[in-house]
Image (cartoon, rainbow, N blue to C red; front, side, top):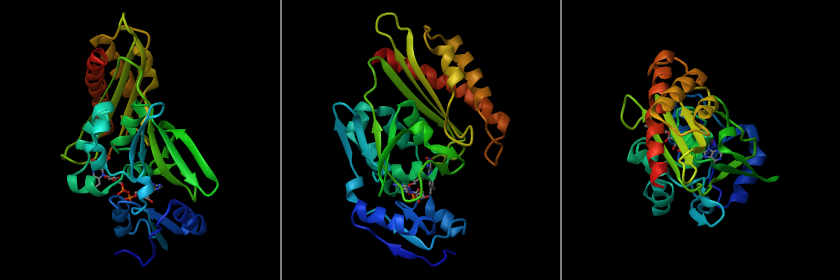
Length: 291
Ligand SMILES: Cc1cc2nc3c(=O)[nH]c(=O)nc-3n(C[C@H](O)[C@H](O)[C@H](O)COP(=O)(O)OP(=O)(O)OC[C@H]3O[C@@H](n4cnc5c(N)ncnc54)[C@H](O)[C@@H]3O)c2cc1C
């Protein structure tokens, strides 16, 4: 049963930030409620004050800018991202990931900002955004700050958001030429969270096809979404082959810090990392060659 709480539905960001600043630890923000309501029903979260930000239209947008690439408001729904021509054209891996996130009903109401703020290490968006080198913008009454998405999650369900702070925007930079990015997740139940998720982004130098840059991001493989930086070093500066991708997968599986739970054992998750890094790396490489 959900404990009683006082409900606020601010109309502007400033109003929301003022409420957050007033109630700090006693309040909780609700966006789509797709994750929060489950915790409230289970009694794991019982705020005295609930601040409903779903109506803040000023945080619901997908905008392109020549320099920044794309800016996505935190209240943009998963479904809006999946269906956006700007995302489909410029960041197709993001739209592909959204197609496999939860059900259409959840995607219609759940928001990208809520997903990231929830801090679930098995969430799909974070590894993809890490591979895409995204930046997050946060706001409080004190002002705004930004940070790389890979620094945002601190531990299981814990993020860098400070009391009184809201996640407001996701910024996607334009990828360098000859960049390919791919993502996949292994899950037992279709439309459920990842048992393991892997995103890989590869940038090739023009002409010789050497790997200029690479980002390998793992989901559900550690307390937070993480980069497999030692595995990246196997590929950086080299002409990527199947054998190198296999080696990168092996190294990534040792960098991962997975747990055993009802979905998979630690060993099984490491095996998934090994296989998926190679498989997704192959797809990212093929895309980079065509880009
Ligand atoms: C059946 C089901 C299946 C699912 N499957 C998947 C899946 O396959 N992959 C996946 O990644 N996710 C999955 N999810 C999780 C879910 O889709 C997301 O976590 C959800 O979209 C969160 O967004 P929301 O707007 O509903 O957040 P809410 O539930 O409203 O909030 C989540 C948390 O974020 C905080 N919060 C929300 N917005 C902000 C903000 N702007 N700034 C600061 N804090 C904020 C809230 O206080 C709360 O702590 C699934 C959920 C369900 C119910």
